[in-house]
Length: 526
Image 1 (cartoon, helix red, strand yellow):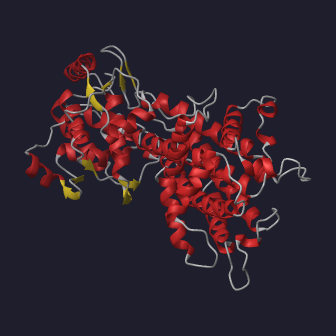
Image 2 (cartoon, helix red, strand yellow; image 1 turned 120 degrees about the horizontal axis):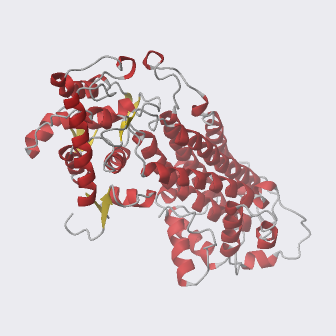
Image 3 (tube, helix red, strand yellow; image 1 turned 90 degrees about the horizontal axis):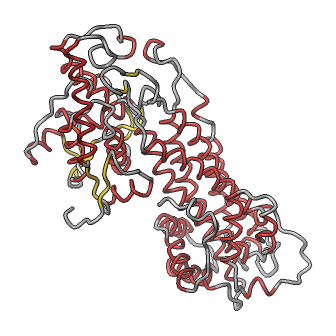
């Protein structure tokens, strides 16, 4: 950690998705500034004064949820904080990815460091220790309804603070007691209000949204490139990507996608070879790429803008403004992100939908020089026929996952919490759709490369030519049937590793081929 030069000041600096990822990866060290510490200490003193005065304030000296009218004595307020973490640790299902759990901790530190939650410095410092030392708590994936905070997952996340639960540490899952033996740490005694501050908030939803933004950004970037390769392979027209068309309907995403694809196709011999052909227009899956990919980018941008607000928000309850004003409000309610996550889930599904249609189009054999099923000797060989079955299955599965989680609400807490967001389910579901999308795009990449081969000896622009060469390092041209599952897995690795995006970026920078647009900064996660 000492080698890290860049610092992020929790409670003072503005957090973005890109900065979250850099903290997760260890590229930035997150610390609590002295300015933030003063706010934290001052707010902690306010809570202590409330306890001394004895007037009932929700969650400080009262019970929780429907027990909000039950007064808790001064002597019992600390026991209450430990009990709330234990009683609310009711999560079930597989553990979430340790990366998402680490993001949750980072987001919680940013929220608590604003100085409105009554948290103690020692508690925040312990959470930072967990982040910096990659001692990441085990958090079950199910159990949150996305309002009154992500109660169950956040409770599991912070059980290690009081000596309970399990963590992933040094690539092993161990009990917190084992962690204490190894490190010499001891359990914390939580002060009044701290337990509620830890488990109330939207960090489970927001952490999933961070991953959605990162993973879908990768898919959006690759979908444009793969779509361009398919246009070349099937001899599609470049005219649908002219700026003159898109400035007549100036959606940001549409303009951005059209400009990128036109730049990728620049200098292509393949495109020039059919300039004067008699084809009037292409099927929608080719010529409407800017409109469909662009709409998905617009949905992504909407979530990104909302998420950035959430990353810097105070989302627990009650909120301590000062000694005279404590507000029991609803900043913990996940609806703002829940609805946007459902929107982005649909956006990711639609990217897979149109990708599957391009794959099917490539198999039809209607493009000049491209054989049916993308293989010349068919009959004895099925060619690429069955790969599209897989994309059809994945696209259909995604459609089934697109029912909006936020459309549902089941009252909890004996009716005290009578409307909830289900945003936790929406976040998990969106990631499932994106994982399926990565597989669909991998298959389209293989299909586009196969079609692209039939354009030889003509060359494309330098970007697609280099990407094609890179793909062929892993997946060779198919003259006959083979176990295509192996090819697909290699394609998935290419997608997940951002291989073709990296190549496109390096070449465009070196050759001064601008893939940037007037909206590029908005469509970047950093």
